Image (cartoon, rainbow, N blue to C red; front, side, top):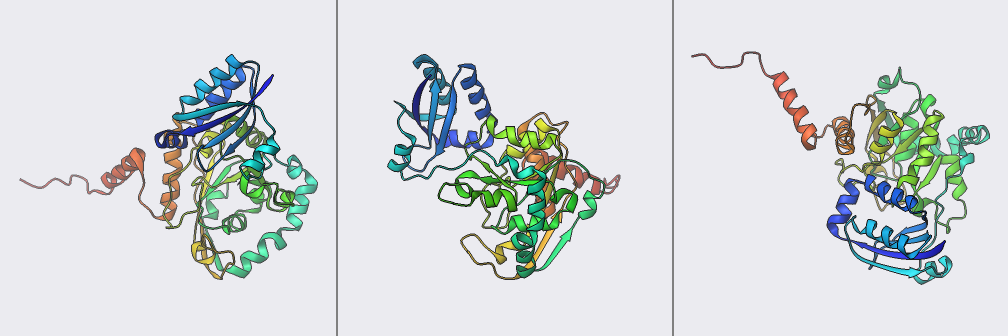
Length: 343
């Protein structure tokens, strides 16, 4: 095997297509595997290039095939170099490597016991101090629910996760982990990344996506664990539901598990983006009924369904063709029968 470093720059349209259809990265991953190669490290960067990827390939011809496959994502510029030191690379671009593998012990019995024992200090006391009051609506929607699920919530504050965990019933809260950005919560500059895995129940997710990102979540679903994901990606500054990423849809369709939407309002006042210290405020969490995607064949349609389920909880108009269709059917249902005028 030979080592290579590939620098990649995407067009604006390519970035949008990739954001709308992250499953395309899985096809690239499969092609890499078919060629007997593997991606050892990948970084999303800011500057001249969008991605820097470290690849081991059996030959120059195999690498050329990989580069050609990547170019179909919407590449406008690629540079390939022989492998050089990862440490030297991170020094040159002033980047900090981060952990991409989960702490798999976080689902062990001892870790669950430690998380529950430490919940008051890590979560509950902060929620009680700053969410005054915290109102939770819709718990009856989960009364009959048992098993694994994907919990999705809108993202407006770093205080979202404590509120979501406080709103969920114990049978879900006791077996749930949280997808967290690896480059933010698991960077090597943080000396206690294990703390997040143990007491908050987080696991690292590489922003670049790819099929490898599904291995750990799918193994959790098989063991009855649920996962909390923020499908908007970044935090909203407006309070409006932002366009959903496709990750939760892909997971739900592959694992055949339902998606539980949860809408939070009030946290933009408690701890808005850019503010480090919370301030007390009224917070409301609204839980919707589980959404199943078993009959959905399109990732785009499934993502639209989930986004509109969240928009319904928020009292916001639906989006997309399915949303407009549902809105039209509701208008027809609300119209009086035989509403035509007389002659």
